[in-house]
Length: 80
Image (cartoon, rainbow, N blue to C red; front, side):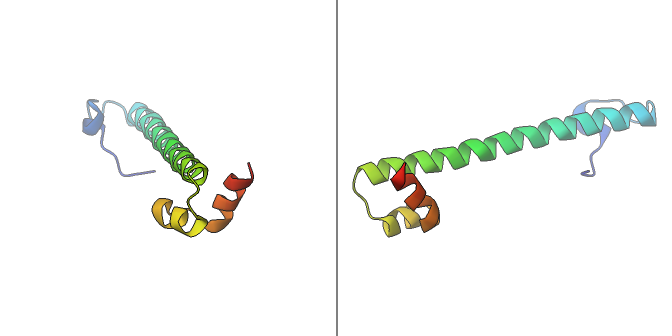
């Protein structure tokens, strides 16, 4: 768990150590879930761009340079 402080989330510090720990753990998990969702959507967006480039007839090496995807992933997208 990250080193978080109750004040960062608007909680009164040291109200009860247990309640503070539970609240911070919950908020930390919620934040991690949001970050993972953003990463997932970003990856999907890059794949969508790669698909568009494939439809435009751009070669795999150029798509790899533009999207930072590996050639194996681009070839899978090309097959689908």
